[in-house]
Image: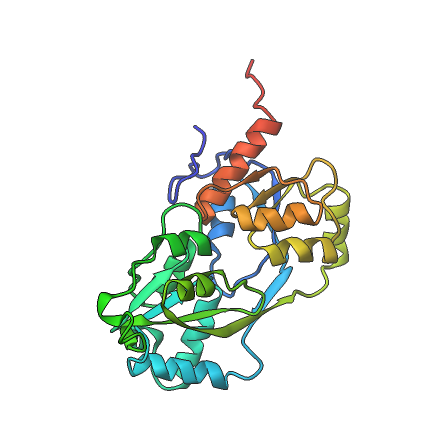
Length: 289
């Protein structure tokens, strides 16, 4: 009986999954259980975790602390989170100012760019009011965004109902903020985290990668694609490259990577499903005798 790529549906103990024996480079490391690593393992793969990118708090968190305090006193009507990487930083800074992220946002609307970010917020105890369908992108979130409240336009455009806080990474494009401003919303952007390259991979990992002993890589951001090439070099021939969404794929292709497939559902389960499909397309199952 083979596994299907669903949340809790896996092979029976001792069985094989659709990714049986495939070594997959995962370009990140987490402090706790990683849903992507769990999903890969459940489907028979051997994850090779290499932190090609790291997210770190801003060097001076003063401005971030100030806007979190503003959240708590009702200055903003919306919090829009465009990356799950922002959530632990926001949660940590909330604790530093003597509260929790859930308490700071309990009286305002919260938007998440996609399911993974929504999950990170919910894990932090935050209720999420808006998640776009389809791809996890600023464009999709902007499309799903509600119209400006009638009472806030234009006479009361400075009211809390029309104000949006967008915490983002230092490398993120201002797509959402610019789009909302164009619709009359008052938007403040704040750098919640910085994306920096991970440490140099060890010699064993370098050799396994360059000699093709790692059969696939899952890229979760444009930064992971760039740092893959910088820290390990381009994938050798035959290595499957799977991207978590079109924006990541665009960066990967721009730097010369041959993208095998793009996850249509931008979650760990969706990423693994895309890898299963790509593997099946390039390595059809052998007929049993």
